[in-house]
Amino acid sequence: MNQQQKMAEHGAVEFRGIQKKFGEFLAIPDLNLRIDPGTLVTLLGPSGCGKTTTLRMLAGLETPSAGQILIGGRDVTALPANARAVSMVFQSYALFPHMTVLDNVGYGLEASGLRRAEARDAARAGLELVGLAGFGDRLPAELSGGQQQRVAVARALVLEPEVLLLDEPLSNLDARLRRRVRTEIRELQQRLGFTAVYVTHDQDEALAVSDKIVVMQAGRIAQADTPEGLYDAPNSAFIADFIGEANVVPCDVLRVTDGMAEVRVMGLTHHLPARGFAPGAALMAIRPNAIEISPAAAGRAFGTIASAAYLGDHLEYELASDHGVLFMTEAAGRAPLAPGHEIHVALKASGCALVPAT
Ligand code: ATP
Image (cartoon, rainbow, N blue to C red; front, top):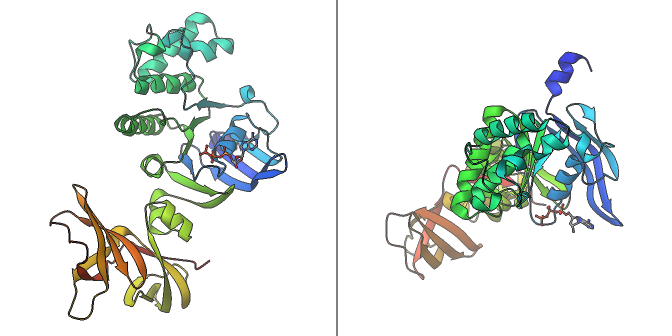
């Protein structure tokens, strides 16, 4: 690599044919993933899908059984954690309770050989970065949970890593604080332009902060895409149901014209982007808000309201029909329809997507 290529690769991450076994158990069969410099990429998926293992291999805390990991274009597979240009923010914060906030932030710098005065100056700058200037003399216990997590972020950032790794960084915070801290982390990442790899099992958090989300299932990448791409164009029923909720029902693609498919679904005809599907059997993922309620014409009801719930800004219904129970939502604006009420439905133009039948 010449100097220019090296600069362009600064902060890039690449997993090449990574495999990880624990004894006989194959946790990650064959992972191939590139993370572009300056982006925030989230590893998302159900418990046990391999998110933490992937992050720990990147950090150098776990050794791959096969394959290569590149950071900044350099093969780091054989390097120990402290020789990699990464730092990690843990869900437990892992602050030293007996050290002041300033000493906590400066600790890694001093440990790597920086003189105490310089480490403290850098730590002060780090605290300023996360909005905690003036908090340096306190002990961690004298800060709120959100502030402690910001100290952990500052401590990781002062080491000037090429890549910041965040392992469920918000899981110890309550719901309101979680929203604020995730926004702060995202703003900081965009302002400073570092690469971040973020592990979470919370899809809202992933949708809110990510440039790209890598959804994992049983050690494999199920789909890697932008938040919008995953939501609007899921490539499987698993993704459709995992990212936002969806009713997944069988359908028949009748014909495809100019990229639009005419589909027969639950006795209704619907037009939507074909996304490469050819005529034949498929599945359709229907978002709960893509089903529109209309009054049932005499003798022609689609289904019956099975349950209704008022949730302030929207209503939730379960609709019993010949096609199974459908979950739907409607913006609040009228009293909920009573269970037993017969209705007809139509599908809205957006909120439906074809997914493969298998
Ligand atoms: P969670 O959201 O629950 O933290 P995860 O997606 O981070 O899950 P991992 O912790 O990466 O999942 O685990 C992936 C798989 O590897 C799981 O089946 C887990 O049981 C297994 N595993 C992880 N660490 C070890 C280990 N040290 N020894 C044996 N198996 C392990």
